[in-house]
Length: 181
View (tube, rainbow, N blue to C red):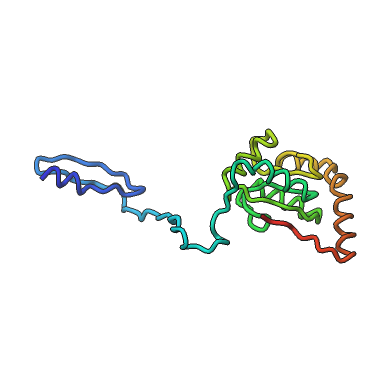
């Protein structure tokens, strides 16, 4: 009977539990009402999700080439958590809002969608944190560096020619959109 009583004990999330053993068996005392435990989504089986919603994984050998291609293809590029319209960290949000304030169009890659890219960009730059900002192919730093450049007026000097070029291209009919990957 004790084994059956022990097997019937359940762990309840958030409850302070205490088991007291009496001569007649186990008795479970709860200090508060049990709460429901939040369930987590499961990864769908292959074929259960549309290709647009499946994680994109870049082979490790191609990560450096991918990073170099991103940086060369855009005057301003940000490796961030989330996307510019929905950043998933405060620092990534800060970078996007600062760049938006200048009106510069920039490319980005969500490092949360591929662990190899997330770790690869850190090795590529030798910088341990995300977001990471590149301007004209040069690694600038993280959100703290970008914000300091903004405060010091240096960012306006660096971005000014890029913004003028983007505006001229737009007037000439060349569409230049924010490039989100």
